[in-house]
Image 1 (cartoon, rainbow, N blue to C red):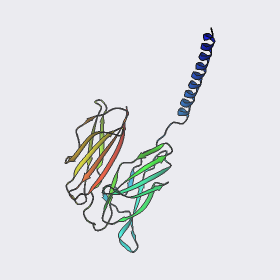
Image 2: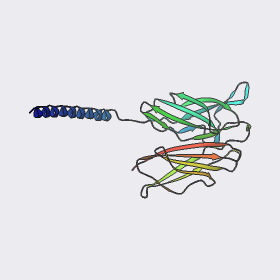
Image 3: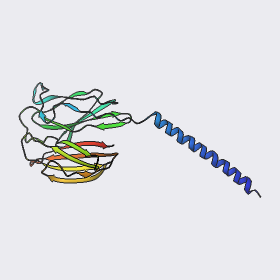
Image 4: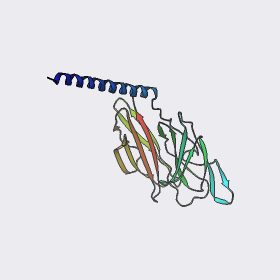
Amino acid sequence: MRILPFLSSLLICLTILYSCSSESSNDSNETDIENPVTLPGKPVGILPANAETCSDFEEVPGETDKAIIYFSWSVADNTSSYVMEVFESGSKVNTSTVGTTSTKLTLDKGKSYSWTVTAINQDGETLSNTFSFTTPGQPMGNFVPYAAEISVDFDSANHEMTITWVGSDEDNDPLTYDVIIMENGITLEQYEDLTESGIAPISVSIDATYTIKVTSKDNFGNFSVSTQSIILDN
């Protein structure tokens, strides 16, 4: 005889819970609309000139085997700071965090380096393409290959992406390439020891992020890594 009062109380509780849940969901949606995620823009390297021997430098007093190299890059929208990283044959040699679009760094003369800039804000970060250069002076051993310049063409009608690259080496050594293509962080295609500078078109998805990684290798065991990310949309 007390079932009906019990059911009535249960129905009231469920109604209250649903109402609270709906209000919470609405509040969350309103918060997302009021505070949309805005990632930084993508920086573009200016100095040192890509795939060249740099001319903007200073001598280091008392150290004839060193040079102070000037770095600069374009302003990236919605950015609070930048992280510049410099590599030699895949090994990181320096990380600099700055609030401006330029900095300088003392490096060995007669070597090839690659570098990237990451733009950062409170919502996330955006990585630049990879750039490379050679410091002035007599070569210290065999030069590391320049980081490959990657180009991506998207065929929206067939949902295909064509990837090509240009590799070079200060010593004019013959180069081979390892290529990894990732879709939303998962490896989609992988190639090793390519002698050509491109691959056949691959099928891709709209609204996906693709990362292309090209490793340029010479026959002395030196290598450089170039990375480029692209978001495909309509």
